[in-house]
Image (tube, rainbow, N blue to C red; front, side):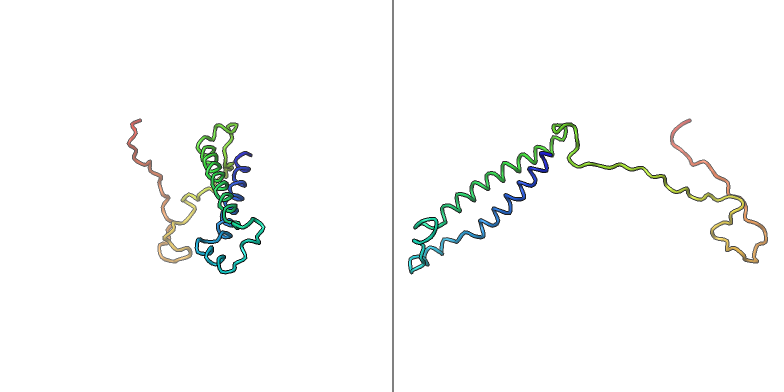
Length: 136
């Protein structure tokens, strides 16, 4: 639960930082204000929105950094959140289909059925025990 809340906050803060950085003007834009840019009539005062946006970007960067550390700590210590895993895993067991075994009534794979060559039925395949390194 806490992980999900922090992850949502992280996404909102990251998008806010991106927006704030794109809104801010560069250092060269101040030269245009000297030639009648009209910066004195802005909502933020005669200095413009530069100091407000810069301060807000710094605050959001600090929140982003602290939130990143909290998320990293939660991922590194999964036992601290009630013993529950952050990513729920569903373990499902399914029975694998049985592989057909070669018996006396089943023809061998390399002998075509219905051929007139070799009128005898193929010999039954004997199952041999695989050699093992483990002593019995």
